[in-house]
Amino acid sequence: MKPILIAAALAGCLATPLAAQIPPGAPAAAEPGAPPPAGEAPKPETLQQRQERSATKLAGLVIFVTNSCPEAQPDYDRFKTVITAMGVKVDDLSQGLLAVRSAEYTQAYQKEPVESCRRAFENFGEGGRVIPGLIARRAPDAKPVDTAPSTPTSPETKQP
Image 1: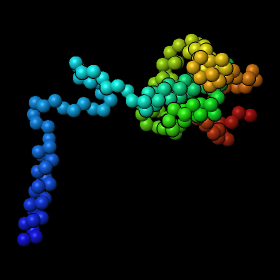
Image 2 (image 1 turned 90 degrees about the vertical axis):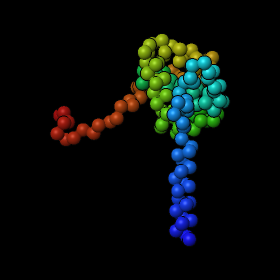
Image 3 (image 1 turned 180 degrees about the horizontal axis):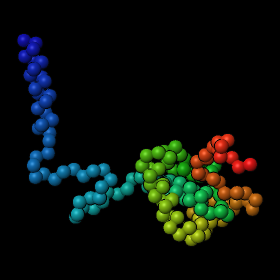
Image 4 (image 1 turned 45 degrees about the vertical axis):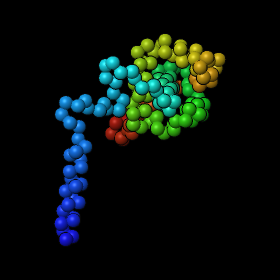
């Protein structure tokens, strides 16, 4: 009797997914993040999604300023405070989708570096309109931060 019950239960479990499949001709569900089908209004962005988008823009800006604005330097403590206040974990910006989006913003800023540096000071400098104090003037004797990976020199490649 037990083998029959086990076989019946197994057959029931296997048949359930088949019944749950989308019938032919029915519209398939859209992937998350995909644009809505034509004629449908996009879903409104949630507060968390807006905060994450703003945080990725700021992260992209900070990376851009560090690498491309020789007269500027970000205030990293202020950056971390602002990101945390948005409800986004700073570590989340360096991995996954948020890191990719941040890099996309950095690339967008790099298309017009002089203008982007000017606007960074205008909006995020000491008297900035958006987040004052996020970007500061680099000290005249300070060198830009080198973000390239360091390569150790071997004894054979050292110059005398």
